[in-house]
Image (cartoon, rainbow, N blue to C red):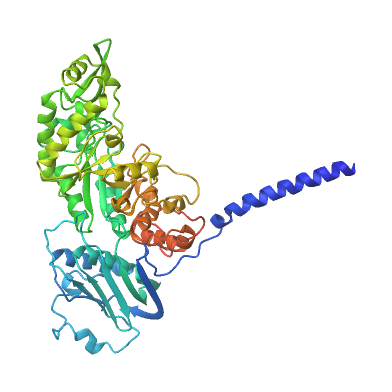
Length: 560
């Protein structure tokens, strides 16, 4: 009897211990996270925040341009005025001159605020200086300078950037430093920031083929990217499922290849221009991806004889495979399409795809076998892929465009140009990054940032811990890693959930790609992450909870 009681007691203790451990695992997620107030995301390279606090008055606060100016800068300032003073947005000035001053600082009209502002507890203006020429027709690029310096002290605030793109990043930071303390009441702490991105390529991939995304969703994502200092919209615009891009050179591509009816599932040329301009105004590049020779089934619906006919015992079996690389008509078509795309899209880079090419259909086709024997390729289908990619690369090179490819092109032994950028996406990223950079190619990483995969709890912490330069390689190799991007593939994502599924989980990737390498502990970032999530909510984005129970000062309202 005593023995039985001891066993029962032991079992009770074991169960109790197991339950305690299980409970402790979830306590951080059950307890509400106390969010920070007025702290920036991503964390700047150098950031000092003081205890002195100043108020801002939405009715009188000014942005004073004391350096070069242009429409890009003016638009950014008006936009950030409305973001900062969001509760007063409906009453915001209707003319930009009411919030801007474009005279040199020595002009007495600019000093007017200083003449009547005698209250040192009120910050009346932000001096904004672009050091280089500010060109209205300019587009962001891989080598743009995004550095800036921001200082807020008693009675004055200054933002200086070498380029307009750096000033845009600084305006975003300033907007995050200002916090609301009551209805229509705003404050900012004394702050000193020196900032620049760790990586030049900080991207977000959206897949608009598997599910069509509304133009509004795409623009919302661009807003979220700007709020997180992400700078590349990788537009995976077409795939084997659908071809929603409107080609004017080959109109049947989208008429036949888009989801039907095509007129409701197509990005018109005007839509594309809208996306590119909206992104440009926020310092974001738009890099389109037209993935071939695989992932091209939808292309064949509107372009006869483009795809390989799959065969059974040498006879066409009704199925199609990758692009047929053996016929000249393929390259005539690609030349025309690339020519059009080079005029529609503004960025220097073009993503050529090249992933997941199944060789089975090529192997089954007797015409392809004959071509390979004739050209000395034998049965090496990687050589056939190399032949195709090389001809495609030559077409792109004639347009003076750079290009990005998925890693399989390199894995299959294809020889590409030295300036190729390789995107590493498969498992085994450390070995792959070492291999790609050892060959001398620049690389971007997405393997660990497939945000379309979801799990219960704070999975953003896993994304936060991934580092693109964590692999065995020389310092020269690691310098060839120019950044990375999060991927939101569209099998289970459309306009109903793309923003909430991407943000603020994507903010973890944004900080990893912008902030210093030493900023790597998610537990230290958790309170700022909660503030960033509420910041996105306050700016009208349905950013999902990532830290368990909690609330925001302004909760999301889909009707606003």
